[in-house]
Length: 463
Image (cartoon, rainbow, N blue to C red; front, top):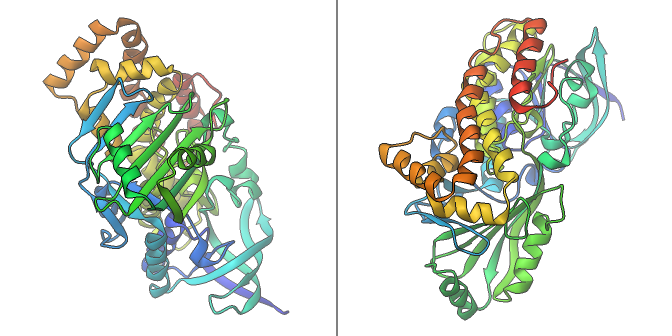
């Protein structure tokens, strides 16, 4: 098979939500774009239901989803500990449940209609570098029509949207040396399924046992010990149930797929799986460096995940829009100035938010089951702060929230002494990100990276 050579402006690798959104926005900005996927296009990205705050669609420049892509919103949300002694209930969840399979398909279609070329079943052979900058990606691929092709894709900009694996960033030393591996203590193994209900009487008994009504979403925390969670949402007609399970990879607790399997075994009223999937989700602040000449990272590959609950769907789309805005109109979208503009814009606008919640996530991960129950029951964690976490915004505490926190500190002083310093550190972290270097200057970035690392008590990314 002869090799086909293409001259492009941008090559996006990974056709999930972040990658497809990036291809769409870059193509709309007037660039010649190719979107590559290792699987078939219909298998790309997450294959489950994900909660997405509606404001993120607006910020990402993507039309809000409609039924059936949007499966529901406005349902009550309940967070409780393993034993149910601590419980916080929101009368209305601030997020929309979105079928990411349909969202990915919509974004891919938008990219295609905007002029991007789509390829599937892509196998990377090698990436050519010139002066440490990627310039040509050599792949075996198929068109959506099933036509095989050997491609030599010369491009000014490569976008790594391959998720946790970071398939492209590992091939570029200038970026890989500043993106250290995610340790198992900061890695979530998650699984989600939408299942039929085969026995409504059993489903009603589950609701009664947990003081729920159909349509309410119950999230158990520390269900299998350690940092683990399970969320169950029964449809109002009791014909379908959504299950979401996740746990930190390190430790003896059941991981997401195991916890989901155990839940189904213990609840025989849950029937066959209709769809779902599994994933490895990095729970760390975004990498301090998201770009180098010729390459940028978006989505999970960049660590652009909300650490408190592991959702990256919305923020990945937002990052894609920020990328396109940063490089629009540039003759060379992969230049140092263009790629640095992207990372500086993202870090200053959202890096502090994600990093601040990473402070809270690390604290909560260290709490025992009893401490989590106390946190939920004492008032130290309020409805407003829970809502802010779900909608992925910094909490804005009202006077009543502050009063509840003070009362909680009296009830649980030992826990308050652990919690309050972390809460005080969150705005310090956020302010540090607002001072991310605007202009290309690796020495200043190294200094900034060291200052952030000190707040987390770990080694800096940029060395």
